[in-house]
Length: 419
Image 1 (spheres, rainbow, N blue to C red):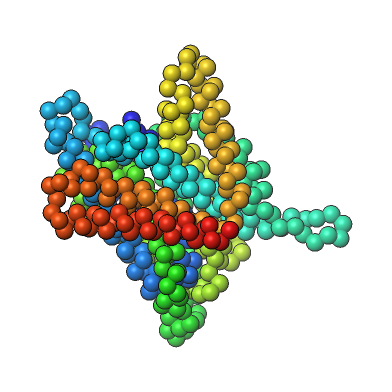
Image 2 (cartoon, rainbow, N blue to C red):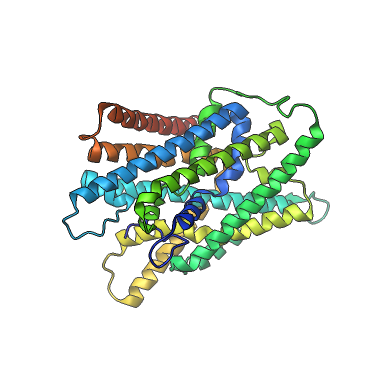
């Protein structure tokens, strides 16, 4: 089984119902990235940000359909072969371009999941520092500010190394549900604060807020938006989990449309409420009182517990490549566990050098997430279905392919030029 074929969180004995699948899609998509949307709207402007998020949602849905069309084509070609009809993202890469296609797809998935995992650690570190902003210094020295890197190394690294010993994904699934519930709680807290601030301003809520802050802010907002639609590589696993696959596309449309609408409203409201002082993680704009501190702590604990779920695809791919035939059960288990701790340590080290959550989310979204969400689906669709598709359809696929490559190149250039 490919690493991206994560077990759905909700599923009956005969497969998931449409309602369960809708819940699985929402859980797989919504993550911490949503709390960076108001900052993206501040960078691009409320109108440009709304259009960018809506465009990212539409493009994500279209490219998900490309994956589904590709698997349908494979099922038609192999209906007489002894195959269960379930394919992973890596399977599509291998069917289209052989072993190189599988390796490239899996490396892209590893980079995407690594980016999401690093973002989790950065998010937790910055929010914990906002709850406990200073530490007492001896003598007459002023208080020292707690460093997010110190939180990551001293608290998160030992905890996540210990959690990496849990290898059963089903045991980790409740933590993922808890994290999403806490994210919803954090979003609700921010929205409540937004409403209070907007009501207190009086007059037009758009007064003093830019509709288009600058042309170069639009790619930034799109990068954050693409990052927010995490879980793209689970599309095929979610379809396979349904009892009636024919109903998956309408359910997927409803889920993507609903999540996109929530993203747009949340981003606009957050920017209108805080304006030019909007932080890259909007929870950092919340007032320092016991209720918001409790929300931040609960959210951080939930994210720390669900971090192993984000790391699971990375562990699965790395272990399959490094330990395919290690002799002896005890020897293999020790080697695998040492590898897991090393991978967690490497991801933690990367998180210590990330200066800001918003810029990092935009970079990951506009590079590896763009490759995974736009470039590869269009490329695979052209390879599998292109000969039977109309010229217009091939042109659209080619357009998504070029757009995704340009988007990734722009994201990489932005980071390199800023060094």
